[in-house]
Length: 277
Image (cartoon, rainbow, N blue to C red):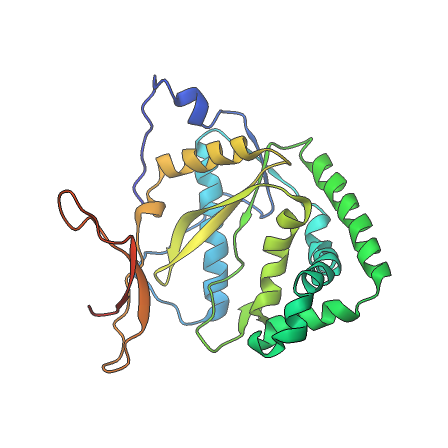
């Protein structure tokens, strides 16, 4: 990883810099300097991949420490229950929003989405009320956490995405449905309305690993300053995974950003192309 040093004396330094002494609450244990594997190394063991994702996030936290952050381990109880609380509220709200189309276009929904929406139609109203009360408790609980820290840091996802057609990932030696594995990492912040940004912080098997920086309610400015400071000090956000060539006669469409096509005119920002074009 290339380390960069921001220029001092910039008129924007106060606005976009990362102030020393920022209290960063880490949801992962940090001890010493974590190893970062070479970008090209491939390890087929899913459990090893998950651990490497975790250790790359730890290395990113150490980078923030070197920029002046004070790391503090935190364990908000919210993380454990956020998924259940959010589903108690979300399923019924989504079912109401889609009620008309559920009556007239039920077959147009994917099987997984359709199942969740139909579940929302039959859940009792008392569950929705209980979910809203629990949501408020979760908000207050996280607010008290932010009395002790300015930001939270966590892995954006617990493991690499599974291959197409595979619906589980291995975490802590157990096969877990991929969607369920994401809930403790996504639901807490959307549940309570906390701003969060994911910044690239490393590569595993050529795939990007993200660090989630979470702020208190209406704390977008702090989150963006921290993310910007991390990207000024590292170059992960400028790296691009190498795309594997598709098998002959079975090219897969990709969405690719195009560069300007010439002086005075520009191609559309995106077009469908095929691997190997």
